Image (cartoon, rainbow, N blue to C red; front, side, top):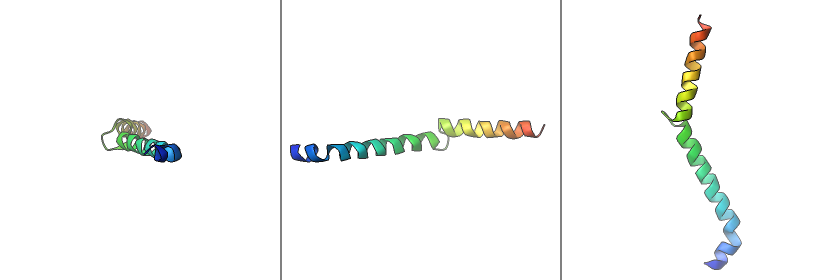
Amino acid sequence: MKVIFEEYSGIIITAVAIIALIAVVGLLLATNGPVHSAFVDLIDKLFKMAKV
């Protein structure tokens, strides 16, 4: 086990970091997520102001 971590620790850390980043982005952009809600509100306000 020690040999595996010595040789592949960089790859393992990189893979875990990429998976965590994908998970965070997925949660933020999910329907009813904070970023999604803010973006939808921004677009709604933009179209309301453009009709005036």
